[in-house]
Image (cartoon, rainbow, N blue to C red; front, side):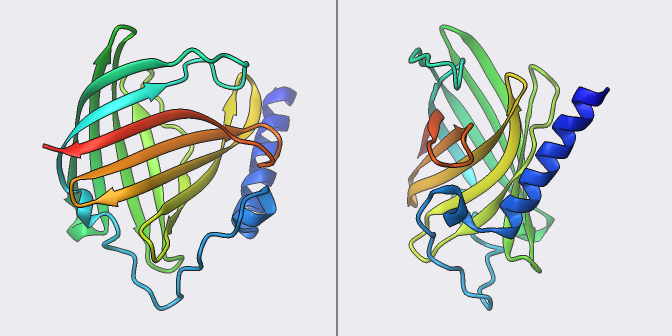
Length: 192
């Protein structure tokens, strides 16, 4: 019980620090500021529809492993709640099996940020959310806190190279407060 409480306290402290201090305090250059008057509630409108997904996944993150596994399949994205949220259904298969999951993305108009929440069908668990937004160049940057191999880590999720017909998604973990990052999830979507 004490170990769980200690981890929870550490995660809570990191989350507070993460939300109180933007990305530069974690060793990253400052993302371009999102103007306070900017309404980002339609930042994901470009993604509504059907996508072919190519996914590379590092199944043993933060262990020094360089073994990646490849999957391919589809992602279906639909707007909900009048576009203030969207739902992503992911279904990909590869030699290592299948990954199925759902991501609920919610827009907070007061914070002018999105919160991304992912749940895996395999485990039935909801991962801790990442929060952030898009800069004026269309790059999405989101941060959060999670636990990997009983260690509290920072999570960075990027949405890059967005066009009307393609996009790239990358997830990385940092076990050293953001000084270094290890990418463990790379998905490239192409509109179907």
